[in-house]
Length: 121
Image 1 (cartoon, rainbow, N blue to C red):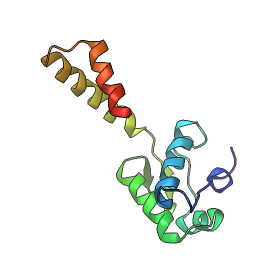
Image 2: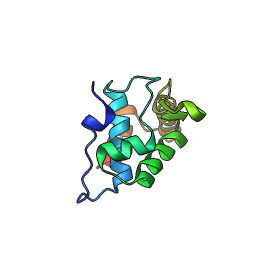
Image 3: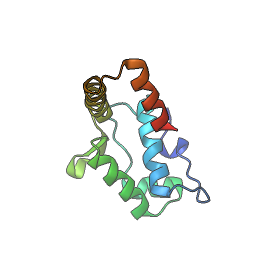
Image 4: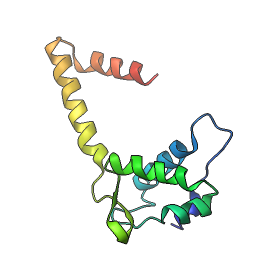
């Protein structure tokens, strides 16, 4: 599995801001099993040093992940991967709302999925 700083790679010439690249890679690491629920992450300063980013950049990524429920801070004990993936509940609720809206409009599943596919393009 290695340390977070071993597999996180940010590209300063990319179109996405550095904090966003870091945020996305942490989420991917969780979904791929590299970061299990309850895993303690490096401090902001430690990770900034490991990946060559400014402390404020890492802090912003951590803050946004904490706001989204992906990470949780336990005071002086540090920052940890949350026990549950908030995307599960959020996506289930969104899917339910989408299906209800489609049904209310008389749109079947295959046509509704076409709208969803278009939204991702």
